[in-house]
Length: 115
Image (cartoon, rainbow, N blue to C red; front, side, top):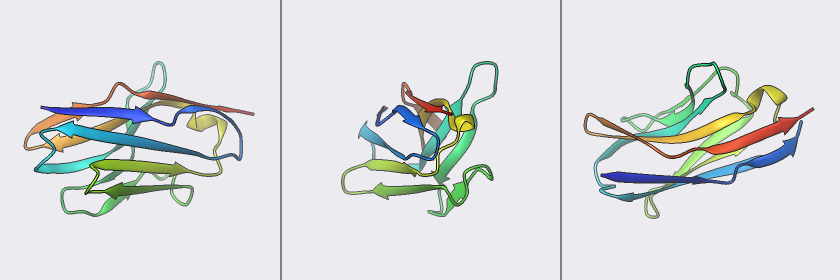
């Protein structure tokens, strides 16, 4: 199995920045895709940014130009640099990885952006 642990969440004022990190462990070989989702109460979990199986990046329209996803394959980590944060970015952010046909989720980290 794959274990995913997120870190870096917290409270920040609008316009500020945060950097989230996700560390993968366990059977990390053959991970096909990895990235970030977020969820607020009463809403569906949505894709924020990820690396697809082909290695290309995908971003939600709402974060394009503000967020940047990166990874370090040697360390099995993926990060999300979040700039120009807005109150609507407030959510629990989850790291997600795909290995074969299985999806793995981290426990999430809270990001709160105050106005």
